[in-house]
Length: 67
Image (cartoon, rainbow, N blue to C red; front, side):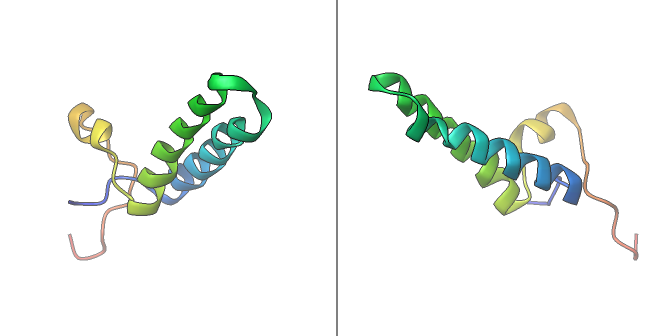
């Protein structure tokens, strides 16, 4: 699994993931569980890998110095 998520992308994913995850505490009833979707951007930021980026051929991670 080669990293394909850069540092700015990670930061945006963390902010968006926490914002979406906060819906668990803000909404009422069964709609609150949609907030768990926020775990997806948090997970992709944590691992530095996004499967959708692989399918689309996107890579926001800077190239390594030796390449």
